[in-house]
Length: 362
Image (cartoon, rainbow, N blue to C red):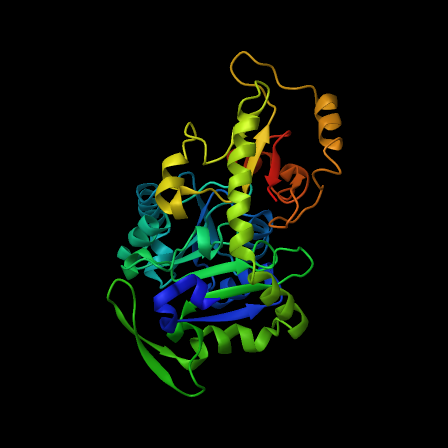
């Protein structure tokens, strides 16, 4: 996995495999976050990640972290919010609390792409670490660790093997990738480490991810699941290429229908189009986008009963499943499933409407 993600720099990175994608996210956040730290997150993230941040880590009786959100895709968008958040939580930062930038790119459910390189540079310049969940993009389409400049690489990359990499939807597994020194140090030892911005620090063995979380929590990937992941990864590149072709085709077909609004970064009229072209391999989209039938301009929203009939008639050609990244095309309504824990206002801010339908293309 490190070879796929980091390429020629694989010797600088190490991966720990977890029993699920959410176990990987929880493990990394549990390792990094301290009491009253601050997380600045991209607006569109998986509902489970949102719930973990807002309902567990931000809970006063747990770690009481502050969670702030960014509406935007660019390095400038995040730089502006970082400065605002730094000012807002100046007292916490003065007491040694840290800001962590949490990204999901391409995002769930819309497939929007963030300028991870520019966001990483803006964050590292200010001394803050960057975490990227790149599950939807895969190392092929979204190779965030292959940048020449270390300032443009995130500090940690997360994948849910459950999705595109395993490909079958029959197992759950996840992985965290980070620099060697932050992931494992032999017991009783310490190592010097140069952060992306040039700061020199010393990392003690018990502050590496292995000893601090992985060894203690026991969410290891078991052998049977590892076998399924390895089997799936043999064909993942072939599957991903075919899926991008199907995604481009289906997005254009839906976009031609007057009653369907399409949110897909592969379409030239999307406000995310240029970020997709700049940051994704060959400008190809991930196999994930959304549609809705909420009306546009002079068009009225579709009748809810008609929408329900449309949704129910998708089977068996399109499966009604909560996961994504499988060989078959699957659809769901995020407001009722993956993002159901979000409040009405949070759903609106994330661009998720009552008739928003997420399509994971097979």
